[in-house]
Image 1: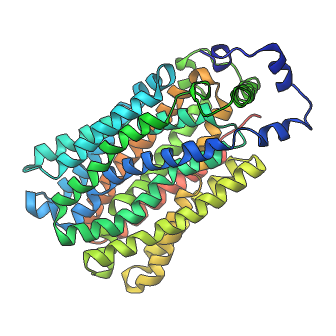
Image 2 (image 1 turned 90 degrees about the vertical axis):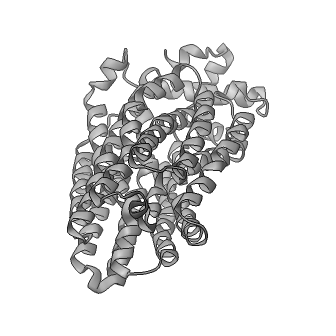
Image 3 (image 1 turned 120 degrees about the horizontal axis):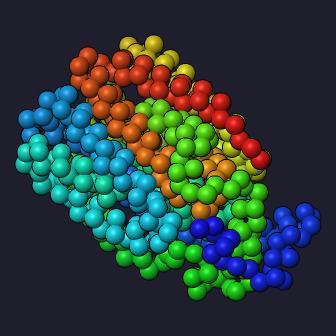
Length: 439
């Protein structure tokens, strides 16, 4: 169902939406700035907790979970990747539910369930139990990313979405940044079991904050005036008018642009999640450092990622350009990965600097990428399409985290893993360059 049909506008306000080009930018700049203060912190913290509970397995691996449970290196890489298997299969159903019914309810339930799954990871006593929990964690977190993107598309306009999406995705690098330091200290003080329990509990508590603060649509918020609600609804409805009509999800899923974006996200995620899951292990092998030092070093690439993400999203919104803020950065990330591999452990600090550059370049395009999707697809199919695109990202993440972990375990060095991540990101950059965006 088209968003414009769901929310009919008064005639006087529909006329305002068609006012001259000179007055329209001024109307956009006056669109309820309080939305940023009410919603962005909540969006950021919610997705931060999701990344906390999916990425800390890499620290448990570096801290000895394999030895405690008798897990081989190859099995460890599979277990680390199992999260993305559950994540893959439940993306589209979750996204369709969020689009048709309520992203707010879906995220609330997911917060509670993934908090319990994350805490339960610290209580496992055998390999099958650990595998079951990792898949379950992926299932209950699956719909969070598309639901949050749908939520943002309901609240922020085209000129704002790259920045709004970036604040969502910033939950990834900023969380991994402080998690890298915190997890190192928690493991050193207590152990990997206690780390999982302590880091899983906040999601359950935060669920009730999310429920109290958020609403699915602007018209449901009691902190917006009637005029602010009307202005926002008119702007969002106006944006839908220039899009090509897509009748149903089947037509959307088989469209060339959706297929291309699925492949872009899949190959991109090979590099990103191989990087996230196994960065502590790569650093530990290269620098032979203690777990606390590994934690501090692992945080550095994410500091660079935060800075570049903010700069790129601002420029993308300013210029209203998406594609050219995606593929060049992905190509740069692939080049940095490969050069870091060429230098190797014998030139650790130079190699580490290039690894930091690669991390920053991989994260920077997320805001423009997710802002591009609602600009090429109408609201009636946007939810399912973003679920499918993110599902392919999850498939790439599964392959990336599994194969990177396998290569590190099989070879004893991160060299082959570097090459694998380089190829994945480079393919993603080339595919993005081929994407045709019709304005």
